[in-house]
Image (spheres, rainbow, N blue to C red):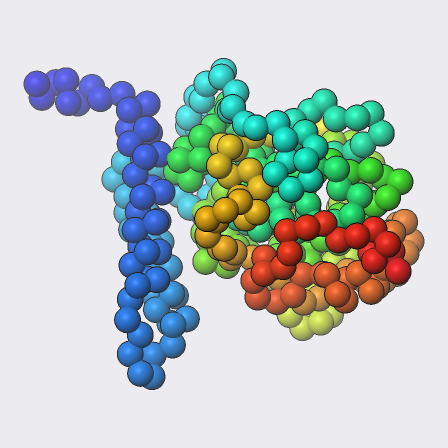
Length: 320
């Protein structure tokens, strides 16, 4: 019996990590949400304590079960193997009504963006006029067709991400880059707000070399803008990959797709927009189509980014 216990496979241990980690996170968050707040103690203090408690528990659990560290990517040879079977998802966008899976119409372009929890990221992008479709999934990892629980374990190398398909005659890649940079804090490394782990890292995963060049240029410009505004002294940590450079995108489970638009959704968002806009000069020089009025009225704001309508912004308003 002892020998059999010693011979428990690494795969079984990894499955245990995958199953338990999300439960630990949900249990700690639930306890924080229902903790009575005494006079003189702010709710934010309770949430911060819960976040630290969750972080400590997660680290201890992963250490005991052989899981990955939350602040460092797992090595490819240590990642879970995954499976050949693709995730089964409804191929119709809950808001836009268009297919969420490729192939898309030939006139469209695609790119994958990561800004932390993919629920809020997807909502910010599907509202942009000219966007044909969005979906949530897992990108830039090693495990084939991973599950949410496996990604949360830190043992797949993926980040939560959103694939965007858009019509370049209506909206430009520059506009989408501006949405990416302004809807979160791209200097936080392996976290975004209260969400900590490699699956919450910022990233842009490009479908063409031209996209990659422009993404890198925009990162330099926006990084300088953040520092000039006195918001941070940190550098941008967003991962930027091009074609063939670990940009494989796997669809997430069906219940995650357009989650925030569905009945009974929990309006959760941990994104931390800085309030610093992408410089106008860069936008104009690179063919941006959205107007200053669009960003003023519909652009991300510091604090939660999801307390807005689910409906796309009308094109006529966006270009005024």
